[in-house]
Image (cartoon, each protein chain N blue to C red):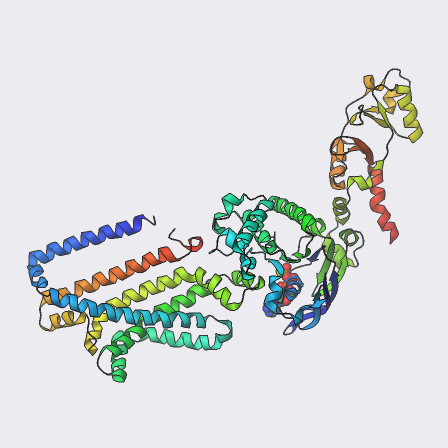
Length: 368
Length: 241
Ligand SMILES: Nc1ncnc2c1ncn2[C@@H]1O[C@H](COP(=O)(O)OP(=O)(O)OP(=O)(O)O)[C@@H](O)[C@H]1O
Ligand SMILES: [Mg+2]
């Protein structure tokens, strides 16, 4: 856990960080967000004391960092910078092992760990361990930069725009890789960004800064749904409601335990079920419950026969693990107002409607 | 490229040596030069001692000064030192030797002092330039990961500046070896004895018996430091490999 108490830094007349109070719970990713020059980097560098605070306190797990030896403190905090900062004179292996070596770890142990860490970010250890940084692509270097910060297994990680210099496609990939690592490692992360999309994607909490002051500190969905003022609203963008779609999983927005029919059911039964639920279509499932097709009310009404003879293919399917952004995109793409939702193995789990999504997003606005 | 350059320069050197040999033979100078062989062997030894001692002193003093010039906390001192060093480059070599002689008198100590002062300049300048060229973010990353200042210097700054530092040493030592003959003028010994006596007596064979080994020594030193540059600078920051 990291706590900032009335943290302030002035450079001469400029107040770069102005009485910031905030707390990052253990295992969470806190993204410091804001326009250029708002004090994000300064705040971060005060945590590992690269910059000494003018006033205020920083506590890590309840201990005031001012009372600790700077060097010892820094070795217990992972640090990733935008320029990556791999040492060009050292091999990848030696770069990863910088902090373990400083801490005097057994060499064989640290080198073995370097290999394991590399494979975690999909870099083949046999290929890369003995290379020099200049022999890696930008994206590969950035992965090594992240892994290097994790080498001595520090509980806290500071990352200053770590993916800023990478092209958008690779950035997404590296972000995903990092989130997977983070889900397993549960580090306490302070992450500087000026990209709202990145923040929404990575953050457990977002801290929005302006002119050195902390303006809003909340969960991503709260920041998007309830910006505290017009500055935050402008900063997160006019399409902030659409951005929220990314934060909700299909599983949380779908209607579960949906009515269903099988191939052997008669059309009468299908019509009866639809009328009972007020639906205009119903999903046909296979013998074990996989979504197979759909029967439409207007075509089924007044006709005889079985569902199996009269079904149509499903127009679109989303996985329950997808986010709403994907569901909405698929609805537009297939010109549908609803979609069947299935799990990883294709079993029919529920359905999601445009109206349901609108309602869900709207509900939180009603709250305020 | 890296491999072909030395072999090309070696070829050029051979060709030059051959042409020179042919010329000297034609002039009948070669047998005359051979008569100085005993002197040459003796003087080359003295020449090398002067160059080695002054070169080693210059490296031992120059690198620390270069490092000092780039330290944050000596910024003011650094600026002054840089001024002094720059001023040094404008003083003619002979003037430095003459000044040394007025302090230490005639003999090897004056020569070594003068030569060291002269050799110092490129080493100091290149050390400082090499260290300044190390990107700030590398130093910052090192600090952020918990390296102490000495560790940053040894593990990050010096390895990344080493190529430039050695380039300075290469130039400096070549100048050093080439300047040692002037030491003779203040009683320091070395191949200058043959060169200047040859001039005074208008004896080309004697002059050349001093000049040619001097040139060869300079080329040899240059080649040796080039090898060191290739071997010592880490592969990740070595433009030669
Ligand atoms: N060493 C320094 N000396 C003087 N002023 C500084 C120094 N470092 C930062 N500042 C000032 O403090 C303010 C905050 O800087 P900081 O680097 O924290 O911004 P930032 O939010 O990280 O911006 P960016 O997104 O551009 O990286 C700026 O106005 C900057 O000019
Ligand atoms: Mg910044």
